[in-house]
Image 1 (cartoon, helix red, strand yellow):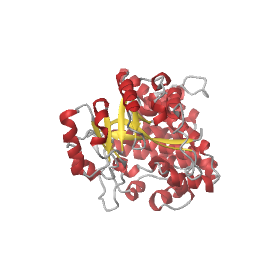
Image 2 (cartoon, helix red, strand yellow):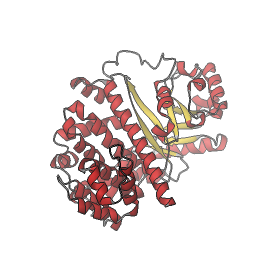
Image 3 (cartoon, one colour):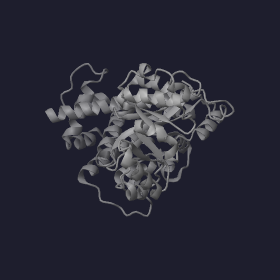
Image 4 (cartoon, one colour):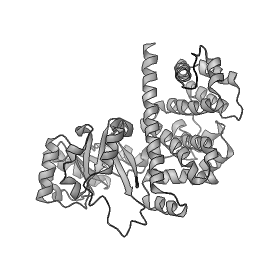
Length: 418
């Protein structure tokens, strides 16, 4: 599909994700600049088609998803097109939509059917007066004082409307306004890296075990006995590992112990499993979106390897993506965090100094996450990279993450029942 998109998280004041909104670009932003947006005249939505195919769970873990809609889409029978839970869909309209009587009637109809209604980039409340009784969300990118004013105005007459503070760049800004009555918060503040001036924090004993495990398997030819010794220290990891091996399609006989399991699975598969399992465990006391970010970034980096002529290095690119938020996970400056974990020099150069071929892949993936579609489009042209190939690489990462999380949930349920 000739489309790029990324779901961006919306947090409540407890740093829990309540939904996602889609940033997108149809086609190459540079080549399409002189043309009208293909979505403007479309009678169906590529996002809804995608949701119907993969399901809400894969993309948002069954949370609300904000779908951008156009004037044309709003006069179609969107409710008939949507095959997922209507109450989990918010129709997001921006300032390019014409607020006329026909649109109002469509908003009333969709609202009555359970669809959520959202507006973005309308600085003046008065322009939305007729629509406010049917509105569920309004995005505002405004200074703190104005955000508070909007909240107070809407609270009295339209208490059902949730205000979303957009483009929160830093944690201190979030901390200042999180208890002001604003409902949801958008922006990269949750993944801001720990500054290099921070002091070294002490790691919990459990995290030390996980760091040791990463160090063991990241060696070129690691020792199986050292690996199994660490795994045995954590019953949850041990059970996950044994279930993984016994469910492997490549292994016909049931495996009875961890030593045998390690020998049967092999170093490459063990490294991949440890990277994902340990990342998930290390993120346990961080916002869940950090886990999602690190794992999606890892798989996306791996999938993009072929476009950078680095297919042979895809495993290391996966590890780089996973380690790219290590400072946030361990609450340490990146230099201190990487000093605790063995990683190849190419990864260190990329993460610490933004140098080397690996940094090109990481920079591309992070630009994609930010929705910097013009720069992504420029790089795609320079590198002769098809937009459809980027789409496939990202969608595969989304589906991989969904399957992984479902497996983890099943394992945790099995462990609790053991």
